[in-house]
Length: 248
Image 1 (cartoon, rainbow, N blue to C red):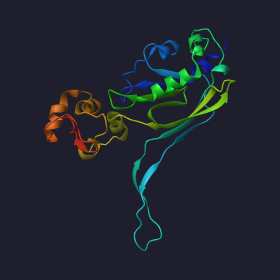
Image 2: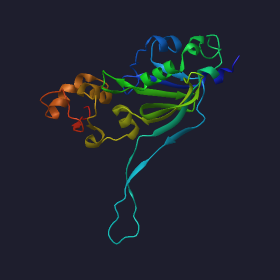
Image 3: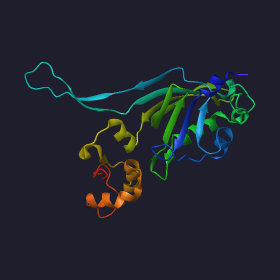
Image 4: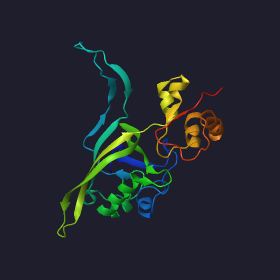
């Protein structure tokens, strides 16, 4: 019987519709039977051999004329990038009976390589209701817990059977960290309204969803629309800035 810690520390990806990762994406039949009845997810039976997290600081590097050095002015910290290689190799997986102490459910071992790739691509794929790729919750034991979206990935097939069909795949993936407006403001602890509550409109944003993120309630959308001089709350212009005043 496998060790319990080994069982539970598998790299997992769960798909959500919202940036706070509270609205799960409902799975289709095969991922539902293999992994979870209530959420679209994938648990990789083989842990990554390496995992790289990149953090980048932005500085203003403008150098005055005639000077040989500068004191760079800090601007911001870019979202973290997670680089990871994920292996899917059905033939090499052990077959366990389904139980809390026994590892992978037996139903999961019945999935073909192509079916597993399809599940992965569904998880990182496009969500029609939000018009963007799914938000993801990445988990790996106590080593990693990150909300992210996929930036890019490539699938490398490394073994083939007598029919020329692939039997093993490595997915080289880049995940981009995401954070809700509420969490961002709480983390930065900024109180200046013109800084901490000025939000750039991104694809899928609505006034009501932003009010929920910032204030924890959608009821302030009318006041926000009035303050910003909006004639309509529909079809917000991408890249425009909306001011969200502090609550009194």
